[in-house]
Image 1 (tube, rainbow, N blue to C red):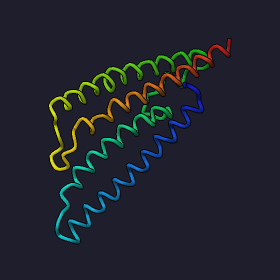
Image 2: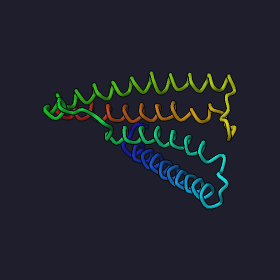
Image 3: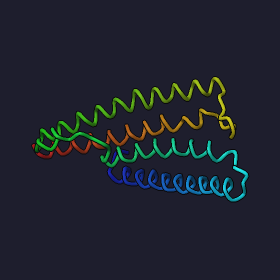
Amino acid sequence: MFSPQTKLNLDKWVANALVILMALMVINVTWQVVSRYVFQNPSSFTDELSRYMLIWVGMLGAAYVAGKNEHLAIDILLTNLVGKAQDKLLILIHCCILAFALTVMVIGGFNLVYITFILEQKSAVLQIPMACIYSIIPFSGLLVIYYQVVSIKLLMNSIKAAV
């Protein structure tokens, strides 16, 4: 379950989902521009749809770069350490990211989805339940947690191998 091959397969799935979402977003925004300036009759749904697709791209993209360990970081201390000390600091960093993803993205995200589901909030134009739109937050949080667990496991194996 936490093998490097499973992580690579998940990376491919998330990357493909991001490419599809971006392509759909480009098509959507292009249609918005064409309908507004060429046909002089702006499409009513494209603005809202592009907003929600941007949320999905942002959240999935954040999970993807967290899995690739390419997220924004201040690494002054990390670059000055070597060997086991660097690995131990990386484990601490991954644990902090995991704690954030669990509390804010998963627990907070599930609460947001639950509240919008109970209140039956719908988007203004598309009439999509807001719970569906916000569901990407806890989903991305679960992806981040998975990626952090895999990274921690690999680092712990590295530390054991060095002994």
